[in-house]
Image (cartoon, rainbow, N blue to C red; front, side):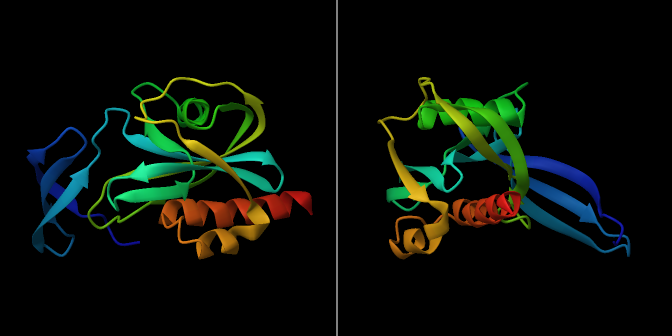
Length: 185
């Protein structure tokens, strides 16, 4: 592994309700200097969770919600930010209760994803939730989310619908399918 570059200067150049853009003056171990811009974490907790809620060993609960970035409704996994002082397991269980109407007795950390690590500081913890029980919390969604059960063993059919396009959800579903296959064997 090469030696990590040194951040000589970090400046916030723009902020919004959700995002902060930082300018980074970087020096590499060979003396080369460059300026990079990145979209920095916008929340004090600093992270996010994406939950794979398993109703049984082959049934995942998806949600259909409006996605402003692509201006359409998408099928995907429940997700949200980790609040300040909240563990990612607590955040996963809270988001599950808010978006799906279930809590989980068992939570397993499957992986950590980045989206575009060259310019985005954001990471997402991928959590498998199982041994579900009914419990609903009020969330911050502007409308009720539709919960859609789907067979993990039929992920390709989900992708064929064109309704599930988020890379994190797709990757997490395939990883959860492999994880479930391995624990059953």
